Amino acid sequence: MSQAFRLKQSIEDAVIAGEFLPGDRLDEASLAERFGVSRTPIREALLQLGAEGFIDVRPRRGAIVSVPSPTRLFEMFETMAEIESACGRLAARRLTPDNDAAMETAHRACEIAAREGDSEQYYADNRNFHEAIYRASRNSFLADQAFALHKRLSAYRRIQLRARNRLLQSLQEHAGILEAIRAGDEQLAATRLHDHVLVQGERFSDMVLGLAGDRRSDASSRSGTTR
Amino acid sequence: MSQAFRLKQSIEDAVIAGEFLPGDRLDEASLAERFGVSRTPIREALLQLGAEGFIDVRPRRGAIVSVPSPTRLFEMFETMAEIESACGRLAARRLTPDNDAAMETAHRACEIAAREGDSEQYYADNRNFHEAIYRASRNSFLADQAFALHKRLSAYRRIQLRARNRLLQSLQEHAGILEAIRAGDEQLAATRLHDHVLVQGERFSDMVLGLAGDRRSDASSRSGTTR
DNA sequence: CATATATGAATTGTATGCAAGACTAGAAAT
DNA sequence: ATTTCTAGTCTTGCATACAATTCATATATG
Image (cartoon, each protein chain N blue to C red):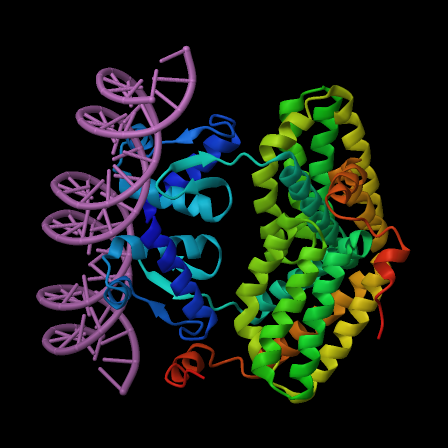
C-alpha cells in the first residue's frame, strides 16, 4: 500500500493547496497518468479520501472535491468550534510545561507573521498554533479528530484569513486563549476558542437553522414535558 | 462501486455485531470467497473502513479489527463525551417539538427495556435515544460525527451494558439529561451528558485494565464464542 | 424550435495475473 | 535449549483487461 498511501497524501495535499477546487472532478485516468501509476492505487486513494469526507465519491459518477452547502459549511465550522473548545478545556485542565512551551513558540511565530502582514505565513503558523492546542489536550484521539476537521476546512479558513485586520484580531484572540489556558480556566478557554473559531457565525447559524423548524419559543414547545 | 459499498456495509455490520472481534484478521482472500467476489472490491471496502478508523490496515501486513490500547479507549470515550456534550448543549438551545417528541419516544422505549432487564433491547433503544439527541442538535454534520464515533465504540459499550443495575442507572441519567435539555439549560445538559458517557468509559477502561496483560490471546480465545 | 431517442465514446467497477514483501518452519550454529 | 539463518509458502500491492454504466452528440419527431 506504499503507493496508494503516498498518492492519498499527494492528492489530499493538492486539494488543500487549492490546486483542485471544490467541485473539480478527480478523474481516475488523468490522475493515474499524472502520477505515473495505474488506476488501481488511484482508486484506492480516492476511496479513502472519500471515506474521510475530504472528497465526494459518487457511485459510477466519479469523484469530485466536496462542495458543502452554506448550511453544511456552517455546521462544519460549528462542529470545529465545539471540538476546539473541548481541546482548550482539557488543555486548561492538564497543561504541562512542554505543551505550554510549544504553544508559546507557535504563538510567537504567528505574532511575527501578523506584524509583517504575511497572510500566507500566518496561515501556516496559525495551523501550528491550533495543533499545539490540540496536543495540549493530552488526548491524542481528540487531537486527531480536530486535526482532520481542520484540514477539511482549510480551503475555507484560508479565504477567511485574507482580510488584513483579521490577522491582528486573530492574533489577539490567540493571546486571550493562551491566557485562559494558562490560568487553568476551563470555561473561559472553551468560550474563547469557540468564539475564535466561529466568530459571529454562531448567532447567525442559530437564526438560519431556526427558520427550518419552530424554535423553542417557550410555552408551546415546553407544554408536553413531564408525566 | 455498488459492490464495494455493500461489502463495506456488510463487513462493518459484521464487526459491530461482534462476529469479528478486535484483533481478528480480515483476510482479503477469505472475505472474497465468503462474499463471492474478487479481492478488488474487498480491498476497496477494507481501505474505506480503515480510513474511517474502524479497522486497522497496516501496509503489506493485512487488516485487523482495531485493538485500541486502554489509554486509546479512554481517549475515545472522552472524545465521545465531549461530542455528546456539544450535541446536548445545542439541543438545549434549539429544541423543537419534533426533536422533543423523538427523544421522548426513545426514552420510553429505554424505560420498558430497562424494567424488563432486557439488556440487548436496551442496547438498541439506548442507541436510538442518543441518536435522537444528536439530531436534536440540529447540526447534521455534528450528528454524523457523533454517530460515527458511537458506532466505533459500540463493541465496548455493549459489553459495558451487561451489568444489570447499570441499565437502571443509565435510564435515570437519561431522564436527567432530557430534563436539562427541555429546561434549555445548556450547561447542565452538557455536564450530564458528559458524565453519562464518561462513566461508561471509565468503567470499561477499568475493566480492560483489570484484564490487561493478555490482550490478544484473550481476544482470539473468545473468537469461537460469538455471543 | 424544442424535446425525445438512439448510438458511440468515455469513465467507472470488477476480475485476473504477476511481482514483491512478509510469515513459517526447519536446519545450523553457539 | 535458544538463537540465527535460509528456503519455501502465503499474502498483499499493483497493472492490465474486460464488462457495465453514464455521458455526449447527433438525429429523428412532434
